[in-house]
Amino acid sequence: MPALILAPRGLTAEAFAPYGRVVAAPEGEGRLYCGEMIENRRADAKLDFSLTTVAYQQLPLALRLFERHAFSSQCFMPLDVARYLVAVCPDDGNGRPDTGQATAFIATADQGVVYAPGTWHHPMTALDRPGRFAIVMWACGDAGDEELVPLDRAIEVRSD
Image 1 (cartoon, rainbow, N blue to C red):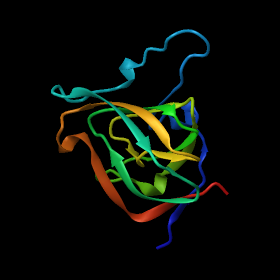
Image 2 (tube, rainbow, N blue to C red):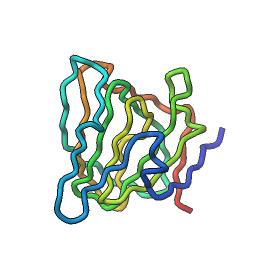
Image 3 (cartoon, helix red, strand yellow):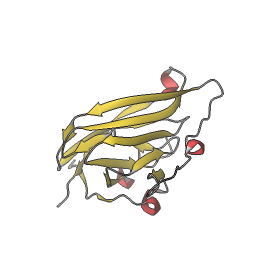
Image 4 (cartoon, helix red, strand yellow):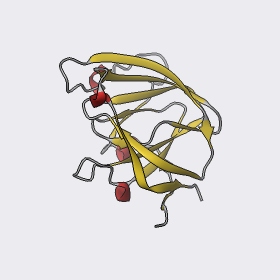
Protein backbone atom coordinates (compact mmCIF):
# COMPACT_ATOMS: atom_id res chain seq x y z
CA MET A 1 0.00 0.00 0.00
CA PRO A 2 1.54 3.37 -1.00
CA ALA A 3 2.23 6.04 1.56
CA LEU A 4 -0.30 8.75 2.29
CA ILE A 5 1.07 12.08 1.05
CA LEU A 6 0.60 15.39 2.90
CA ALA A 7 1.53 18.88 1.78
CA PRO A 8 2.11 20.99 4.91
CA ARG A 9 0.58 24.44 5.22
CA GLY A 10 1.44 27.37 7.42
CA LEU A 11 0.37 27.01 11.05
CA THR A 12 -2.58 29.21 12.03
CA ALA A 13 -4.69 29.24 15.19
CA GLU A 14 -7.87 28.63 13.19
CA ALA A 15 -6.57 25.63 11.25
CA PHE A 16 -4.97 24.07 14.36
CA ALA A 17 -8.01 24.65 16.65
CA PRO A 18 -9.38 21.06 16.39
CA TYR A 19 -6.06 19.79 17.81
CA GLY A 20 -5.11 22.43 20.37
CA ARG A 21 -3.83 25.97 20.51
CA VAL A 22 -1.13 28.04 18.84
CA VAL A 23 0.81 30.23 21.27
CA ALA A 24 2.89 33.29 20.47
CA ALA A 25 4.61 35.74 22.80
CA PRO A 26 2.99 39.18 22.88
CA GLU A 27 4.34 41.80 20.51
CA GLY A 28 6.45 44.36 22.35
CA GLU A 29 6.47 44.47 26.14
CA GLY A 30 3.98 42.46 28.14
CA ARG A 31 3.17 38.98 29.36
CA LEU A 32 0.81 36.33 28.11
CA TYR A 33 -0.50 33.96 30.82
CA CYS A 34 -1.02 30.47 29.41
CA GLY A 35 -1.34 28.19 32.44
CA GLU A 36 -4.98 27.34 31.78
CA MET A 37 -4.00 25.91 28.39
CA ILE A 38 -2.17 22.98 29.99
CA GLU A 39 -5.09 20.71 30.88
CA ASN A 40 -4.77 17.94 33.48
CA ARG A 41 -7.18 15.00 33.74
CA ARG A 42 -5.51 13.08 36.61
CA ALA A 43 -5.52 14.29 40.21
CA ASP A 44 -2.20 12.60 41.04
CA ALA A 45 -0.26 14.07 38.08
CA LYS A 46 2.59 16.48 38.64
CA LEU A 47 3.60 19.32 36.37
CA ASP A 48 6.46 18.22 34.12
CA PHE A 49 8.78 20.82 32.59
CA SER A 50 11.56 19.64 30.31
CA LEU A 51 13.96 20.92 27.69
CA THR A 52 14.87 19.06 24.53
CA THR A 53 17.14 19.39 21.53
CA VAL A 54 16.03 17.59 18.38
CA ALA A 55 17.97 16.84 15.24
CA TYR A 56 16.60 18.29 12.05
CA GLN A 57 15.17 16.61 9.00
CA GLN A 58 14.41 17.90 5.55
CA LEU A 59 11.29 17.50 3.48
CA PRO A 60 10.24 15.17 2.07
CA LEU A 61 10.15 12.88 5.08
CA ALA A 62 8.22 9.81 6.14
CA LEU A 63 6.21 9.81 9.38
CA ARG A 64 6.11 6.33 10.88
CA LEU A 65 4.95 6.94 14.46
CA PHE A 66 2.28 8.98 16.23
CA GLU A 67 1.89 9.63 19.94
CA ARG A 68 -0.72 11.04 22.28
CA HIS A 69 -1.10 12.08 25.89
CA ALA A 70 -4.63 11.08 26.86
CA PHE A 71 -4.69 12.85 30.23
CA SER A 72 -2.71 16.03 29.62
CA SER A 73 -2.13 18.80 27.16
CA GLN A 74 1.42 19.01 25.93
CA CYS A 75 3.01 22.36 25.14
CA PHE A 76 6.07 22.87 22.94
CA MET A 77 7.61 26.33 23.04
CA PRO A 78 10.52 26.95 20.67
CA LEU A 79 13.69 28.26 22.27
CA ASP A 80 15.99 28.10 19.25
CA VAL A 81 14.61 26.71 16.01
CA ALA A 82 14.16 27.87 12.43
CA ARG A 83 10.96 26.06 11.45
CA TYR A 84 9.37 22.85 12.64
CA LEU A 85 6.80 20.32 11.49
CA VAL A 86 3.52 19.82 13.34
CA ALA A 87 1.66 16.71 12.12
CA VAL A 88 -1.64 15.73 13.78
CA CYS A 89 -4.70 13.57 13.29
CA PRO A 90 -7.87 12.71 15.19
CA ASP A 91 -8.56 9.44 16.95
CA ASP A 92 -10.21 6.75 14.81
CA GLY A 93 -12.75 5.90 17.53
CA ASN A 94 -10.83 2.75 18.49
CA GLY A 95 -7.92 4.37 20.30
CA ARG A 96 -5.66 4.66 17.26
CA PRO A 97 -4.63 7.55 15.03
CA ASP A 98 -6.91 8.17 12.04
CA THR A 99 -4.10 8.73 9.57
CA GLY A 100 -6.56 9.19 6.71
CA GLN A 101 -7.50 12.49 8.39
CA ALA A 102 -3.91 13.58 9.12
CA THR A 103 -2.78 17.11 8.43
CA ALA A 104 0.60 18.81 8.62
CA PHE A 105 1.68 22.36 9.38
CA ILE A 106 4.94 24.27 9.24
CA ALA A 107 5.45 26.32 12.41
CA THR A 108 7.82 29.25 12.68
CA ALA A 109 10.29 30.11 15.43
CA ASP A 110 7.80 32.43 17.15
CA GLN A 111 4.92 29.91 17.32
CA GLY A 112 4.42 27.39 20.10
CA VAL A 113 1.81 24.63 20.09
CA VAL A 114 -0.34 23.15 22.83
CA TYR A 115 -1.67 19.74 21.84
CA ALA A 116 -5.07 19.10 23.44
CA PRO A 117 -5.33 15.95 25.61
CA GLY A 118 -5.71 12.88 23.40
CA THR A 119 -4.49 14.55 20.20
CA TRP A 120 -2.45 12.20 18.06
CA HIS A 121 0.70 13.90 16.85
CA HIS A 122 4.06 13.09 15.34
CA PRO A 123 7.09 13.57 17.62
CA MET A 124 8.75 16.99 17.35
CA THR A 125 10.59 17.42 14.05
CA ALA A 126 12.81 20.45 13.45
CA LEU A 127 13.36 21.57 9.88
CA ASP A 128 16.39 23.39 8.43
CA ARG A 129 18.63 22.96 11.51
CA PRO A 130 18.50 21.36 14.99
CA GLY A 131 15.92 22.85 17.32
CA ARG A 132 15.58 23.41 21.06
CA PHE A 133 12.20 23.43 22.81
CA ALA A 134 10.71 23.77 26.27
CA ILE A 135 7.97 21.20 26.99
CA VAL A 136 5.25 21.48 29.63
CA MET A 137 2.67 18.79 30.47
CA TRP A 138 1.23 16.85 33.41
CA ALA A 139 2.63 13.38 34.16
CA CYS A 140 2.40 10.57 36.70
CA GLY A 141 5.46 8.65 35.55
CA ASP A 142 3.43 5.69 34.30
CA ALA A 143 2.23 4.22 31.01
CA GLY A 144 -0.74 6.62 30.96
CA ASP A 145 1.55 9.57 30.34
CA GLU A 146 2.20 8.71 26.70
CA GLU A 147 1.04 6.28 24.03
CA LEU A 148 3.29 5.56 21.03
CA VAL A 149 1.77 3.90 17.96
CA PRO A 150 3.78 2.79 14.92
CA LEU A 151 1.77 3.52 11.77
CA ASP A 152 0.56 0.71 9.50
CA ARG A 153 1.64 2.79 6.52
CA ALA A 154 3.96 5.76 6.39
CA ILE A 155 2.72 9.30 5.87
CA GLU A 156 4.97 11.18 3.47
CA VAL A 157 5.22 14.92 4.03
CA ARG A 158 6.51 16.90 1.09
CA SER A 159 6.41 20.55 0.26
CA ASP A 160 6.03 20.28 -3.50
